[in-house]
Amino acid sequence: MNQYKIVVVACLSSFLWACSTKPVVTTPTTQPTTPSSTNNPTGGIDNTVKGSSALSSLLSLAEQQENNGNLQGATGTLERAVRISPRNPEIYLRLAELNYRQGKNAQAQSFAEKTLSLNANKALTKQAELLLESLY
Image (cartoon, rainbow, N blue to C red; front, side, top):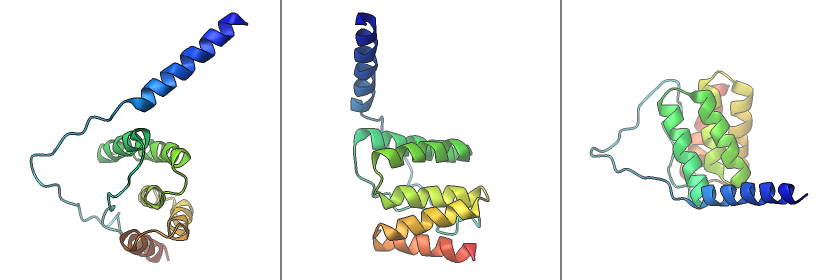
């Protein structure tokens, strides 16, 4: 029983330590450009997500995975972000776009509709509407 308590305390400590670290942010030397792709009808994401450092880390990781072509990994990472911030419309829009790019139109539609249901800002609403239009 004592060993069980030690294991639980160690796991919780590790989890809290991992959540408390700040993500490493590098500043690009050139202004990034948004790629215009026929696979991404919304033209990119409004990067206005605020939140905990754990959420920021997950969003950064998802972006890196997406940039490296790992769309499934990015989707899984964003699904973890939803558990941290389930009312964040940007996460759902990013999930909609990733699913659209993977040909998962039903999931893309569901996530885009969820974005709209969360009363997203004008830019996110427009992007979600464009994505829904491209699905029909």
